[in-house]
Length: 100
Image 1: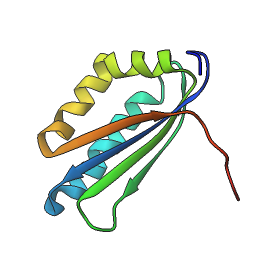
Image 2 (image 1 turned 45 degrees about the horizontal axis):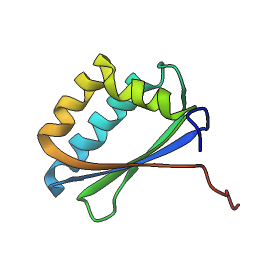
Image 3 (image 1 turned 90 degrees about the horizontal axis):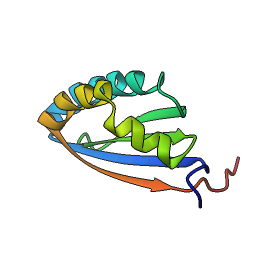
């Protein structure tokens, strides 16, 4: 894969059950901050049924666009309240097969 290939970010966030609602709100704010940045394609936010996780599935035009987003001050500011209540584990993937 080259830096001009689209990338998929799957980021799993972990929190205490009593903080999941707040986490979901903060993740929505963060994704809204990302959507106007160069290279943003789409994102979906998922609430874990166990009450202690959430996930963001996002598609970026390129790895470089994703890296620029991760350093952007608006995104860093949106991450602050998330970091206060959750841990996270991001991974980048190449797009795979979609099966309907």
